[in-house]
Image 1: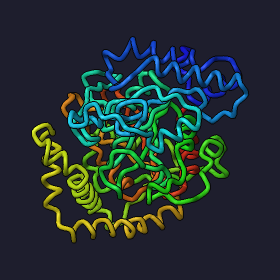
Image 2 (image 1 turned 45 degrees about the vertical axis):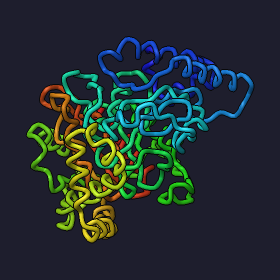
Image 3 (image 1 turned 30 degrees about the vertical axis):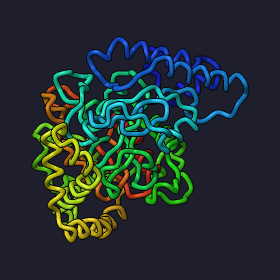
Length: 441
């Protein structure tokens, strides 16, 4: 196996056991980036010497007998809206060009604590919204990689780095992971701190990860979780043992609720056909279930919250740099400024009652199974594709993972999304691994 294509969990074990060094692994990733970056364009900042210096430091720590974290010596890509003290964070906009944070965000600090090498900063869309960056889909450069975590998804998919971090306010982890054919995992809202991460919307912003296996998604996902007093939506709680539980066999065969959602008609014919075949193949393990009528307005509820919060979060950019913002973002900011406080507050407070609508479903099923996107990555680089099959789960703060199990009509990846109850991330990942094994038989 080419060293750069080694998974994160295996690489960490190989480094711990002295069979490879972190410097060798990082050098292999940098070599692969050199050969593919011109086509894929996944990175916005990359300092090879800084990355190799981190790797050498990790190797020296191992030789000195220091305590090792679960990602010791493993390179990680970081979306360019997460602050890094030793690299610029420019948020995908010329308005923040040259911005150099003074400290790491909590997620990056936790990655360093786990022993990871921060390889570089991956491309984001403009202010992590909809206007695309330079990244291309590794499977077809004429197609979008998705957004807003486009660089992170493409870097993992093309073998440039084993794992990467992104964010999701609507579908910005699940969608690009589906389009690029990798695993994308968004933990339960509040399990990962967003301190010193570009804020779009406090009720919606969530951190997620990209990997080439469920095992690796669990490894990095568990590493970045934890309470942070700087993020009021995190809580002191025991860390979920994601890595251990995902490797276990379910005590009984999981029950999957196939949910079309209120936007099923937006899925293309190939996606609808593929899921019909998948559900049929799963037999008694999958049962079609409808969401209660209360979810019919969830997408509009999400839009109200997101656009009002965007207008507030990016007020300075809107007022001082309007001419340098994309038309699609300007339209969202202008709409957000017109949203009434009553409508916004009703939308936010209504999320709790929405989540209650899942009680009956999860009393009988382990997870929801549903498309990750309306179809395969569309042609063209002017847009990032629809996030509409992610909206409800993001609004409700539920853990979700997309698995690269299907193909669209043009042979492009098509993700299968699993969604679990809030806080039950470990069981979600265990079920995901079971499904991957079941389909591969």
